[in-house]
Length: 257
Image (cartoon, rainbow, N blue to C red; front, side, top):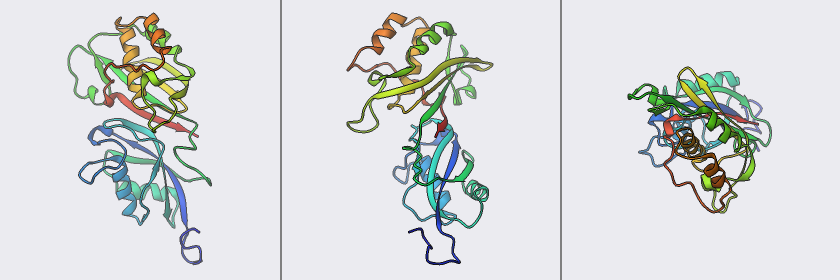
């Protein structure tokens, strides 16, 4: 029964969903850890507690890694709130640090779960080319010393689209979970600051986007052939053991419902 259901003068607990943006640089990831470690979840829950929230944990669409950013993370939570969702957004932002923001809040439909109700997630990885270090650009993007071959990367990227076992790019985030994923769209785009890799799938494996990004850049830089890439995709039981792309270049852009 919703909180306050027997008291007509007191508002009932409602499930809300909020879109969250954050700069992940100073965080040890999304998921709450010990008190001495700063996380997105802990800061969000502290802001909620400041306006009367009393539950134990919020729900989220995904748990981004240390240093990963977001424009469209989705969370949900139950709250007794006697004002509008817009007022709730303002109240939470007033209690959040500068590197986290609630972008939008709505009442959630019955049965909504930010993770299990999601149909797909869209991630973006940003890359720029500069032979010399650029601290400001490197806060949100991976630096390459020379430009890769975009045509080769695009050709390889097209081969990723579809449903297959992607265990080569990472384990399931859940013990005994499946490593089959359906990549709905993947493409590279040239932008003024460099290039972007956009990928959308029904779900992702651990570090999957960061592994795929490195492999595609290896192709663009002439260190892996398309034939070798095809062999990698079709090899079962083997994991790509190369380095992960740095977390600072990755951003969760949106969760689709």
